[in-house]
Image 1 (cartoon, rainbow, N blue to C red):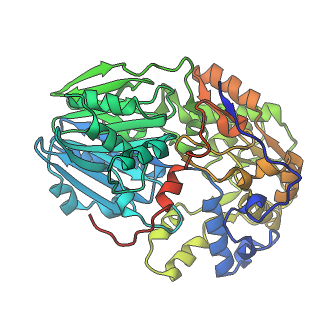
Image 2: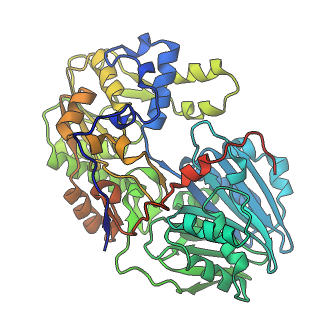
Image 3: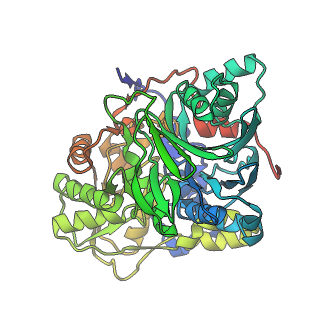
Length: 527
């Protein structure tokens, strides 16, 4: 039976964290009615940090190719297309058939892999990984793919997801003398694989994944094979493609498009695929759950809109959510405008359904997202100033429907509503293309604690008052589920909205993946 997490008492005293601000110092934020172009440098920086904190973040993206003379270069391009899934660290491991060559670093793909590095990654097989950025803590030891030498040869692993029993297994292995080189839950899989008594590597891999619980899409590179698996619930995506005779695996199809690969199909929940000598073999050793639990937030926010996940286009689904949102929460207005870029597709759907013109009320500088890697504070502050800007003059006296995909803590939206009002908007009606987020994710998404989620602590009317909107409407959980059943025709995980968790979480062992990452702080470490 799904586990329902207890809801905290609304009458309990609210700390700064439970007021939707987490560990972020809200005192540094500017007043909500201050015009954007009148903010100080410190206030602009604080607003940018709040914007990054007030989002969900996927933890990683994975990519692999087997049987290509340009394996490392194509993996680089694949990771470049998956950069939105993780910006803290990246890595590529290539295989010559005899040895594995690895390069992992903190930072973005384009800044890490120049021609000399890629040329050093020899071999016809390669896998890669990008990981989400934690706040200010550099941990190169947790960068993936993770490598190891076993009695069966070298192995490297790239993992997307979160293993809910990793802590229990890790303590068990450490009690038997195992030494871990990282704080990542993904390393547990390597230890299980190395300790398996099975003879063949694919059997060892199956033995290892059968012991873990939670969300996983995994690619394992051996000396001569590439092996992949999805968990029986199908939480995270993993697609199969072909490129000039080579086999390709990717978290999203947008990476296949970039390298010119064709999308063959998706790895099924509970399926293991073994690619060796140009052939793909399918094994189904993990009992597929009776109901699929694909993460609906992949469709709502995480995945790139040009990707097709489990057979359905992300952009089209987001537009449909906007249409349903318009039917559920209509309002008289002069324009529909998105919070860029997360609300764009839903805003278009809302505009089409309502007949209200779609307009751009905010201008966003897309390059500002790279400010965290700039070397000087001066450059970072400059880029923060152009994160969001309301279009003055154009908005005078207008009634605006502002559409976004979610409200996590609410710290950013109140500032955006204030910017629109300071630019002349008469009314601002906020519409959210997902239900209220009331619970954390235990299956591979970096989410705040339950008490930090604004919808867990406040009613919808109280949230409306806090963000200073004229009205606030969320997509209903029933509307979300009907749309998923009708458009996607698959089972979904909506635990962050419904509090119904498909895999029971042991509260004593449930350590979020990024909390594990934060356990050790490591600066300027090289492999």
